[in-house]
Amino acid sequence: MTADPTAHGTGTFRAIELPDGTDPVSKGIIRAIDRSAGTVTVEVAIDGLGESLAERIVEQIRGAALTLPEAERVRILPARHEDKDVELAAVEHVIAVASAKGGVGKTTVSVALARTLSARGYDVGLFDADIYGPNVPHLLEDIEGPVLTNEHGQPVPLEGEDGLEVLSPGVVGGDPPTARRGAIAYGAVENLLGQGAWTDRDVMIIDMPAGSDDVVGAALEHVPVDGAVFVTTPFDASVDDTRRTIELFEERGVTPVAAVVNMNSFACECCGHRNTLFEDPVEFDVPVVHELPFDRDLQRNPGGRRDYDAFDDLTTSVSGFLEEVLGALPDDALDLRGLPRDCQVRQLSDELGAATPDTRVRAVVDDPASVCDTLRDDVGDVLASVDRSQIGTTGALLELTRGRSTVSDRKAARP
Image (cartoon, rainbow, N blue to C red):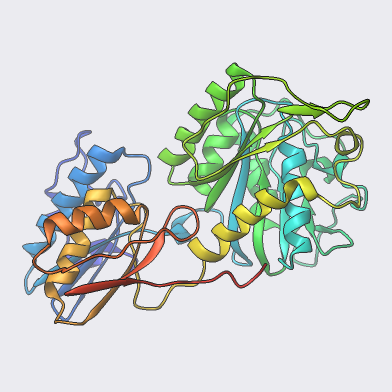
């Protein structure tokens, strides 16, 4: 697919007027166009536009593409992370650990998650993006700075005994400049993360700054973050702010993987009785919510050499997301995640309508149950039945054929 949409004479697409008076080509929404065997394929970047506006723009682009010479079919696909400014060529997947409030245990969760993933056989990188108060170095007893550079001038990550690679502003030449703000603060983070001499990593855990300041917003815009784990305490204000943080990440195209309600209970040291600090359960619009008790030993030495039994369930959620949702897809699978739901359905309807009987159409969608329900209504004459299954946390590989459908059962390669 061509990287420059202007190479195809896109006057038809430039005629589409967006609400701000621009067009999808100059706005950068249309990232690439390809014409092959009567099919016009258009890659679009619509993160953060909102469901209604994104759907309207996608369908306008679809209509414009159908007017192109020799266009028999149109395929609209969401642009993937390759267009992000920060290139992490050595990193397969990126998971952010975020919180709306400081002091809720975000860094502890980041370190424990990185350690437990590493113990399960993943090659893990841990990046401390908190320019204002980098705490990762304080939690890792086997990581000591300063960070050195290689012959290319790249900062070389520090390596722990378990193979964990770590970079943090807190171990780069003295105390971090906490007065930095805006682009200057994010630039310091981007330079360290993007220029780091990382070796091949299965996953990068990014310990984000608390809140939703300039660094967080810029990181979501420029760093290829696949999913996020959100950390909160059970306190009402923290929970409400975390809900808004989840919405912010979703608007930027980042998939919520799980939430962690930290310090929600404690065990009495005298009798062992479990005491909950808040009566009401904490609910978030995420696939799973994990609860962690207050652990005195963990507070004393959160990054030391220890078994993180309390984080096993969280690690299982993240590893499931990595292996099942972000795992390698068949070469012929259409990755429709990120398009509005109705646009995903429309694309699948088109694919099935053009398919011959028993031709398999493979696709990955965000909400298989909802997509299948709508497909059954739209193309019931094409699909005799639609089996549905939700693998992992947010998506499934659907293998649809005219007259029947199956769901691929992709198993995680690691425990």
